[in-house]
Amino acid sequence: MLAGVAIALIAMLAGIASAGISLKYFLQPTGVLIVVGGTLGVTIITTPHTGLLNAVRRVSQLFRNSVFDREALIEEIVSYARVARSKGLFAIEPLIEQASNRFLAESLLLAVDVKQRSELQGALEGKVRLRERQGEMDARILEVAGGFAPTIGVVGTVVGLIDVFRQFSTLSSVVNGVGTAFVSTIYGLVLANLVLLPAAQRIRARVAEVFETQELMMEGVLCVYDGIHPAVMRQRLRCFLREAEESHDA
Image 1 (spheres, rainbow, N blue to C red):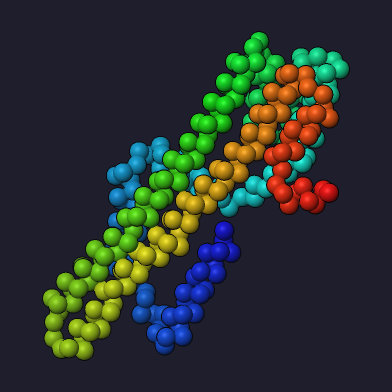
Image 2: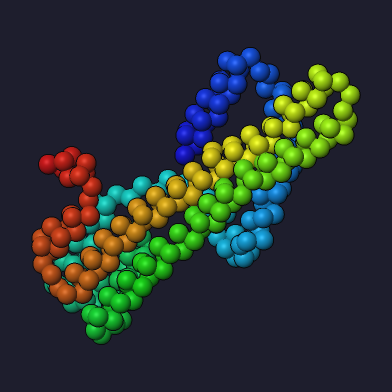
């Protein structure tokens, strides 16, 4: 993610430099204040504070490595199945605290506690769907903010133009002031298209990846509950592997 932002910024700065425009020309504190402050203010107006905090927390998680080793996860679930088939479902309870994933641990605890499969499946599906909707809500907040940022930039441009004509003296000063005023529009476009909207799409991609992994764990826990043979379970869970992983294993 950081590499992508860096590449985009470097490309933009290189394009500005190749046009012979000084970078100092784009350093306009007034435009930054209007665009960043205005976008933040509008986002606070449209979003409850809990939702805003969740979105900020979600963005901070994007900078953490969250690569899931699904092959290892499958083998871990299969190991629980072996214990459950040989010693009974309650035998896995002491092992649950060693689970590598919190969702997996919670799902195994449910499997031990519930008495009916439909009850277990309904509870797991509800948790998975809820977390998916929460991720979509966080992405939507950033998407809405990205929609407002360019408009706030135009507001900054209008403010700059008002200041230009207020200090109207010569044609050269007007032309220079108009150019400076439009920097606010650039700020709004950059904030929206290099920060907010890409972050929203990144959240959606991360949520989709987590959703698939949690579906894998849900299917595995249901197999453990049903007492399915570990070999059969492994083949069923390998359907959740990517084609690249499958070809690598082959």
